[in-house]
Image (cartoon, rainbow, N blue to C red):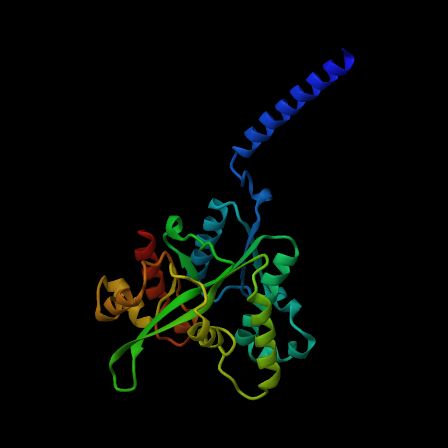
Length: 278
């Protein structure tokens, strides 16, 4: 009789445990940011060179919070993981070596236990956060449809991929290969190389061969497209839309275009106002 009662008691205990388990499983997986499995990383030396960058940072931070992702902003500590041979070189070419440094930081985040690590440039604006959804892929890069005049003065779209948005998940097979390839290229090329040598240029070359997973909603805007967006229409904008597989929900606004005086700080502020509907 005692054995029977023990068996019945054990069965009831198991039933109760199953009910509790089912109830807990019915709760949202990401209850609070502390339970997040995703880290979003951004980096720039402070103080920021333009006030509009703050609006870009806030848009990414808001997007991360709304998805219960962890968020980390870094300064020059971004370069702490660079191999010793590049420490001095990165002073002369910070853009190029930041392309490698971001990869090392993303890999470190995965090694620290995050299931997914995301990089977004500081001049990246998320203006439609509900549509800015990371793809169900082990990794992904951003889409570039760059509209500019060619040597004959004709408008042309250069379709590429970019690293202003990067996403890597645990057990992806691309990140280590990318880091090893970028490191080897930087070690072997000691002369003058383009700033985006191991960024968009290398990624686009790889993409043309193996078709990397692309987050099509993570775009990039050229100066001509920016000016058309401010005006509300234009041929460059038409070509950009035609070349984009889907509407973008966020875009790299290309701080370099501002630095080269191809667009003004005031124009970028007006663009942000139009994109976010302010």
